[in-house]
Amino acid sequence: MTKTEVTLPDLFFSFLRLGATAFGGPAMVAYIRRLAVERKHWLEDETFRSGVALCQTIPGATAMQMSAYVGIRARGVAGAAVSFIGFGFPAFAAMVILGALYTQVSSLPMVVSALSGLHVLIVAIVANATLSFGKTTLKKWPGFVIAALAASAFLLSLHPIVVIGSSAIAGLILLTNHNAAQGAVDQSRRLSTLKPVIVMSLALVLVLLTLFLIDRKLFTLGALMLRIDLFAFGGGFASVPLMFHEVVHVQSWLPPNVFMDGIALGQVTPGPIVITATFVGYMVGGIVGAIVATIGVFAPSFLMVVGIAPYFDRLRASPRFVAALSGILCSFVGLLLAVTVRFIMNVNWVPSLIVLAFLALITLYRKVDILWVVLVGIAYSIIFCR
Image (cartoon, rainbow, N blue to C red; front, side):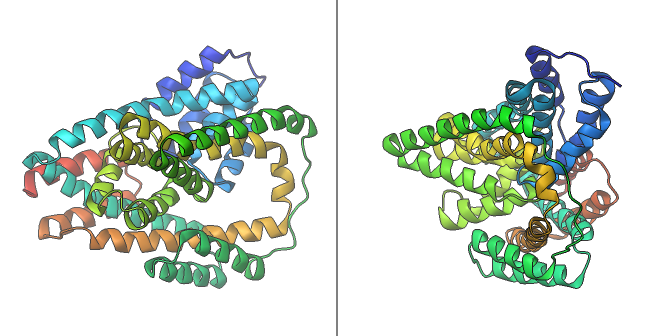
């Protein structure tokens, strides 16, 4: 199969249409493959699979990163940018609209009932993510130990960056496998992406410096989202616990129930769960805050896709890199477990909500589409949870 020529507008509008129905987070990777490999023939299947491996290795929302990966393989850095923006814009627009409506209608009885049910669905979603991540990540006893210690550390409110760093060191000590295969490095791709990555990184620093001078709160918001994305190994579900800790406990910008409302709204809009950052930004600083938070939470992962792709074979061939990454992924199982416990503690449990949580967890575990689980759960909570 040979690749076909692609224009930047074709990339943008193709991913814009796909992003408008991008429910299910990482599940969207299969639809991106259908678009890029089967329908448009922009990439060969082996190239696409290599991109999936890269996006699962580095921090950030996997589906968003795959849109950038397809773009960079099809049309270079410009292609990555238009694909990434096109795929993410529908989620951003929807979350801004819902954030604005939230401030007006969040106290209405029907809305309160729907949000109560959504809080429970969030518990089930994160609990199911814990089970799924644990099943694929924890293969040997050192992994279980790292995950358990990480969960305890998070519940004791140690800073996430400290826990992640410690877990990486533990992975280096306990999980190193010296049988990693050697891989080749694409030198030409490295040269074609290094300069744009440096320019975009400097532009991002300039934006942060400008925010620092004109609005310290927006600067803190942007820097916080940048830091969250840099350590979001394991995809969007890893970002949410970090965001919860920083936004609710450290900065005290939002109470726990409002933050969970933001996650809930993120589940009824297209895009990754980390689009919750847009809601947080809107609550903190209006539309400007939403833009700053959204750029902050997506820019690092975009730059990593563009910048690290040329080095990925070499990184995967390093036993130490693989071991440190394994330790970090184990810590995120612990992080998801800890945030599940915290979310459980923030729900006002009644019998009808217990039933909803149980049914939602079973259906999610059996791989029922998350959109249907959310829609049925909202209907259930409106009817039975008043």
